[in-house]
Length: 299
Image (cartoon, rainbow, N blue to C red; front, side, top):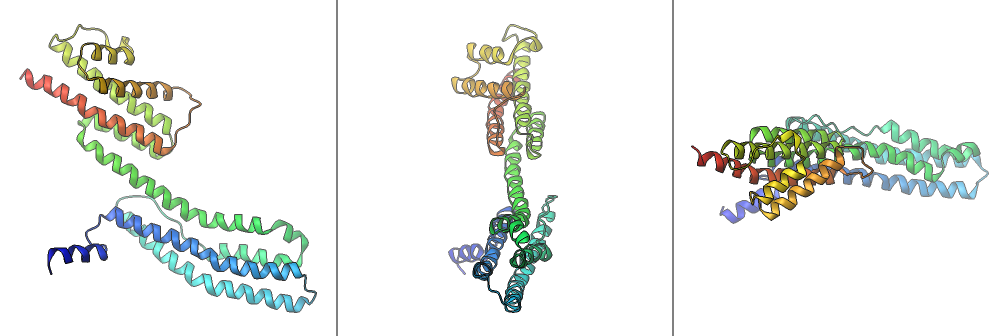
């Protein structure tokens, strides 16, 4: 088999793809299967709505028709739910093998059928019909499906955050820890705090840069704790110790750090926080090169 055919074969059957990518594809399939699960339920509900709207007086006939409808839904969705749960169990084992603690919950047949049964039986009592309208039925059913949906999307977000963590491998050990801490805080929902922590890390790098400059008498000494981050950035730019590009990027980072270091009306999404942390993680290596350049020059 030539190389071209081998490559096609590997990608056709998933071999050679990254594990996280394959897990992502598998999770997407689970989401699709759950969405398709609602189709036969909706079809049966349409039939039920006809029975309800015509208000057939033959209770015995209606009762049989509703029971047949209920049995049809059960026989259709039970094997589908069983298949979905089997896939979820496999996904959880794979996720566990990747050293993640994220767990995707199974769909409980009783939860689904309980809501369906309540809606179908509501034809006999006005009170129940008011309590389980089509809209409420749809909302109640969506809540059951939302649990695995949310868990899947949370895991995908977690995988995304791991990609950012991988990017910190280019940072020095002390700075790497600060960015990882910011990402960990971000992963549990404290987005503003995570940006502030990342901003504190960039100030540590700037302080180390000044310490090296002081050591070699390349800059007039001052108390680092007494000078604002804005002034420190300004001094570096004024002495042409950083480029204009880095100056503007550091200035933007400083604004974010100051804003989110205090109660702020501005709300961040997880993606927005990650983006700010990533920008900081990209600036740090450029400053580290300058620090290392000074150290090498004096050795």
